[in-house]
Every structure is written in C-alpha cells, then in structure tokens.
Length: 106
Image: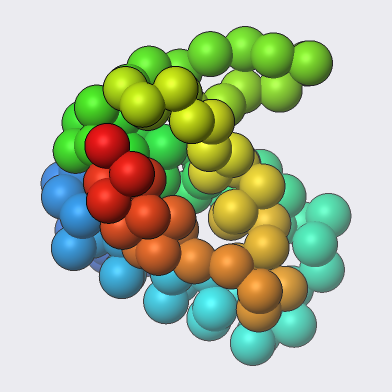
C-alpha cells in the first residue's frame, strides 16, 4: 500500500472516507483500459486495505477459509473485500459501500 500511496498520491489513513478515494482509483484504472491481469495485484492490495478498514471500524477479524481471506465482523457475518475490489473494477462493486454495510450490520 505504501507504493500505491506514493505512486498515486493517495491519502490512505484507514478512515472510512479514504475508501471513496480507493473506489475512484479503481474506477480510473478501469477507465484507462488496464487489463484485469495487469491490475490484479493492485486490486488485491486495495481489497486488503478495504478489509482492514472494515476490521478497524466495524470490528472483526481476518479469517482464512476455503483458500481465501475474509473479514468476519462481530455479528458473525463474513465479508469478501478482495472480491469487492474485483467487482469494483468491473463496475459492480464498492469498497466504501461494503464498509458501510458491514458497519451497519454490527
């Protein structure tokens, strides 16, 4: 994430507001026509960042299950921020909205 912060001049401070910037950055990458394979590593990083914001603000923990990583919030629900970043890349998701929903569920 440090490289992304420096390269894109993103202000990533683990606040819920920073997820607006992450969603916009993913949208910009998509609009530039970057192939998914080339963006996959960055998307994984953005998803992990989004998951950590959920852990910090909604409460919960990272868990490994089925070969993937999920966030389990205090109410027992599971969230997949890595997939949400991929969904955001194709115009169908939002890390900001995932965090909002996770915070509302607790």
